[in-house]
Image 1 (cartoon, rainbow, N blue to C red):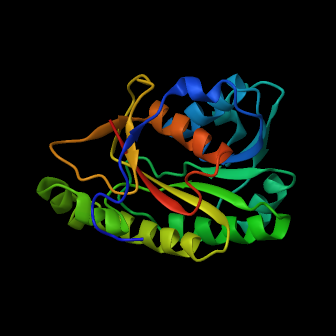
Image 2 (cartoon, rainbow, N blue to C red):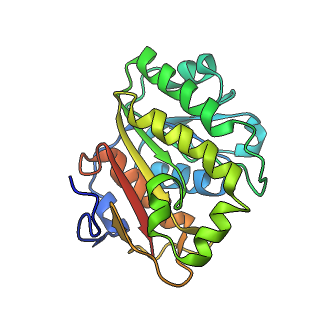
Image 3 (cartoon, one colour):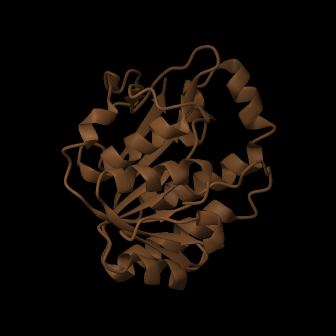
Length: 231
């Protein structure tokens, strides 16, 4: 495929498309984070069964009996493999909050997740990266590029290592690149494409990102593709 913009015409998707989708068994990483909580909530609303791998089970709170909460570390292949047993898909919304020191989180987690997926025969992986990582940097505005080169330089370098490893893993991967994340409500519609040129200060709610990630996990449209997502 050509790398010239536009890679594919952007489309708009809606939350309502999830309602008639088949249920899945899934492992959610980063389930106690801001985006991960939306993933768990949406999965439960859709009737899915799954597991949340968390370092502190108390932080997850109570979930329906269709979800199992397992204590473990996403950078440990052993822990991820235990939680991944019997799952149809692994969905990662791992993040590090406001910290600007990645401490190898995404590098180590990607290695652990790939190893665990291969060990347990889980072929599908949906992984949330960040807009501005890797080739998506070229689609950013001047202001965004400045921030990515300075403030987020170390974080994005570590995320690129993870993304590149996932692409070469042989798994049925999908990489999701949201623009600036907000805590706003889900609008139910958004733009998503392999390449989206940005203007101004693009944002996307975590709720909408979670909606798209579950849709991508269910279908094959985004198999082995990069999905840039924004309002």
